[in-house]
Length: 128
Image 1 (cartoon, rainbow, N blue to C red):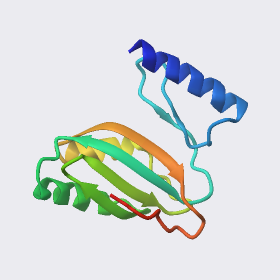
Image 2 (image 1 turned 45 degrees about the horizontal axis):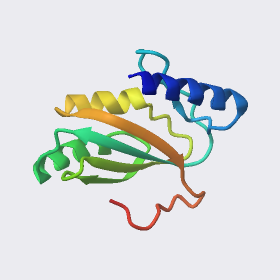
Image 3 (image 1 turned 60 degrees about the vertical axis):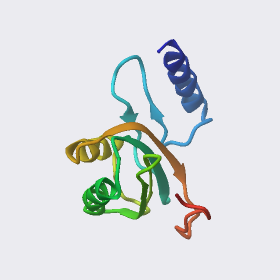
Image 4 (image 1 turned 90 degrees about the vertical axis):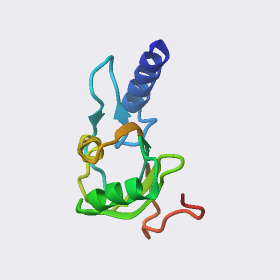
């Protein structure tokens, strides 16, 4: 846990100094991550979800995620628990909302990360 606190402190310093994108999630202590304001441009969201054990599990989670306005290109690998999605430009999809949807589907989010997508909205080759 000490390593996580050091990472959070370093991330907070980098955010203040402009070293991280404005959509970075910063965790302080044991508080829930605070999602920064949505910036212009499409994003890719990668999650690691615990508890996915079969294709039917992945299908159930995918159905819940498809109901979220702004999420596109959802792909789920139940063997690794990796979920990859794209968020359209201007959509406000918070990490907290994604965690709640995953929990409501019967699973747990281990990790969420965001990164910018090219303006065309195309995802990188080799999607999971």
